[in-house]
Image (tube, rainbow, N blue to C red; front, side):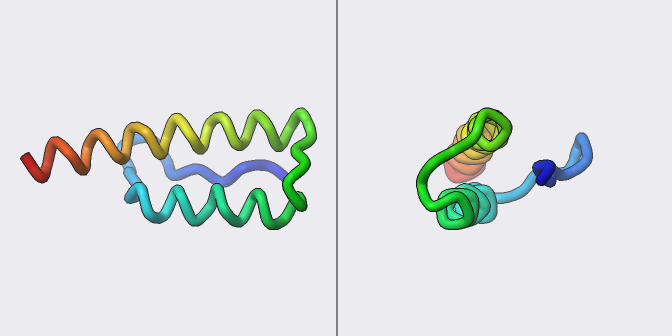
Length: 59
């Protein structure tokens, strides 16, 4: 299954990305294949970016 990411310029909230990360772990039963690990890593980077943006907006 290929990861679903928003088009460039479209940002999801940290909560939305976190929900997708949780769904990935549930779907895989906690054991990631190489492809799923790549998806997870991309999601974590997206989540971190979303968190930074939310902090900047709140400041």
